[in-house]
Amino acid sequence: MEEKDEIRIIHLKETDSTNEEVFRLKDKVKIPFFVRADVQVKGRGRYGRVWVSQEGGLWMTGLFEKKGEYDGVKFMFGSALVVHKTLLYMGINARIKFPNDVYYKDKKLCGILVEERENLIAVGIGLNVNQKEPPIPSSTTLYLITGKTYDLEFLAYNIGKGIMEIDRKSIREVVREYRENLSTIGKTVNIFTPSGALEGTFEDLDVDLNVILRGDVIYVIPAFEVLHLEEYER
Image (cartoon, rainbow, N blue to C red; front, side, top):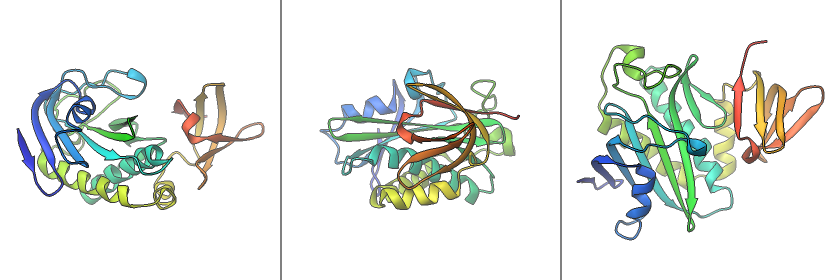
């Protein structure tokens, strides 16, 4: 087990889930810290979906203390923003799909899983990097996009550093910058909520964390009530 001192990244060869691992280590390692694994054997996405986590991807979770009511949403939006900005810096024109996915064109590159327990927040990042085959047909990898292989330690450090910066920002700062980079604005979408599905144009995400959807009428939907969103062409 290796540890990177500056932002405390613990590197494991294999674990069940980096989200589970950070909670197991919460009393042994000073918070905040990150765990990165070469392989996850029980990787998870949102709502218990299986996340294929074979060697070659960046599977990493940070653990933070919860300081504000909306920290979970702040990390969800902010982590997608950090990955997006990191990829842009690398010359990869990815896009953020609401709420927390990073896509290249119509293929998924990265998913984020934020979980809260005992006043702690786990921020999980699953980024497809060096795999030579897509983990699932609807996904892609950085290697498939560019034909290049990437240094996972370098990516982990830079994404981890960015998430540490999100921890220091206000929710309004994060939402404002996230909104400026959100590709879903203007798209025709289906939004699934606990009350049912709504269809319309995704007009905006306001500073109060409401999705503004224009259908037959204008709907104002709290962002945390969005279970799933599908973009499609008319």
